[in-house]
Length: 356
Image (cartoon, rainbow, N blue to C red; front, top):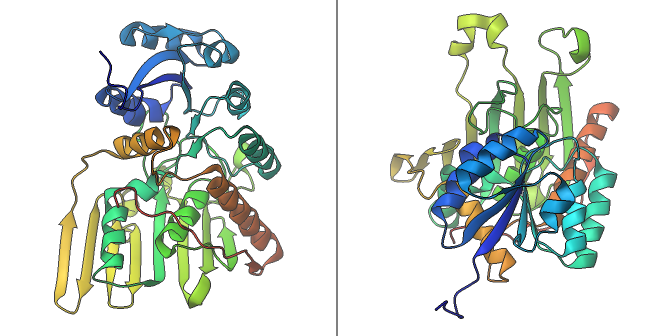
């Protein structure tokens, strides 16, 4: 007999079978079978969904509406950008079903504003995926800032992007889908900095440049960007990110400085290499930690979504967080066009680390 006091297991309908599904969410959802059960799949490549459904023993749906309207689907996982964009999220809102969204949401601000209005109108739980918040190195950094190191004052760093590879492992050096740098990794790094400082920037300035002249369809796209963001109380972040051209540079790419982030705080400093390495220094000297990847990033994200759906205390980001980040990306692009820093709201970010 089922325990009535135990939160109900969620029946999951998955939309989009891309990299995040294979490497992050499918393994996690199968591990967390006491909380989740995969019941239906949809992909724009119907045969791919059929093969996956056969392996998992669930249904392969021919359309988005047919998946979302199924009585055995409680929540919708929107994991891979496909031809339909955010349309499944609107369908889920109409059906009153919570949404886990791993799509980059900063590319079309008016569209996202319309979605936020719909989510808030219907009251549907909606969790955007800001995975860098859940990397082990980020969580350990948050612990150190709250205890040993004190409040952060300056973050400096760089992120390397090696382009879009459909079959690579997702992480801080590859894109989920080919989009402008300001969206990925730019929007996620803006969110990460706001997460570290517990506040949104009060102003942001950005520059971009072309290292290698582009040709064909890519002409005019920058391959290097940076932003400087001022936060309440005088704290600052200076972040750069760009495409590193392995084919053209050959062995030269091996001798570039390591990608990572320096965090200077009131009582010490840290060096963070995503996802799992951190070095830090305080009055007692230096320390280095290579952190375990258990629970996995997928497990942490899915656990927070489970709690959000069941209205338990959750530190999941919200659709409003996604909207604030999208507005920051708009400010970033405006700064690039106007050639100077622009003012931003600088509101407080209340969410804490998912393990606290």
